[in-house]
Image 1: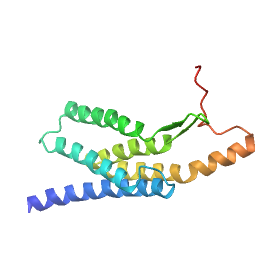
Image 2: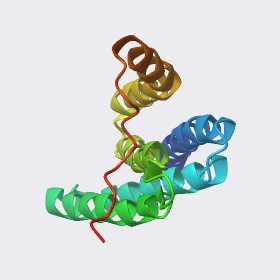
Image 3: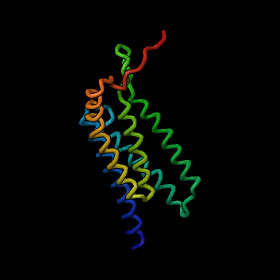
Image 4: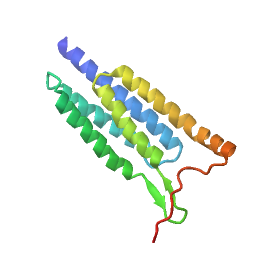
Length: 158
């Protein structure tokens, strides 16, 4: 019976991580972004697995968990950088939101992996709301204020 409780907890944590990755990836996929359902889901499952594997050592070692989280945060920065594109012709940057959603997805899944189900759920909800209303809100504010979109960057000095 003890094994059932152990495995049911693992299944729940992995399922919630997968669900978070799928929901956030679906949002990016619906907006025709390069990192969609598969990318976000894989990042989420991997992050939850990394955190759960540390917690399986018995007594949770805070330093070990800290090192895993540091690795996730740093490593996901590199993955996120791969979806950021700068157009030389218009000096616009694309992919920042997708990169941020990949990074956030990993941390939500890490929360689920650590057994922080409420924190993971609330974070997923907050990020999904941000992704759903952030763009329309930015466009509305740009129309009202006349301020140009914030993804333009200054040209290179060369």
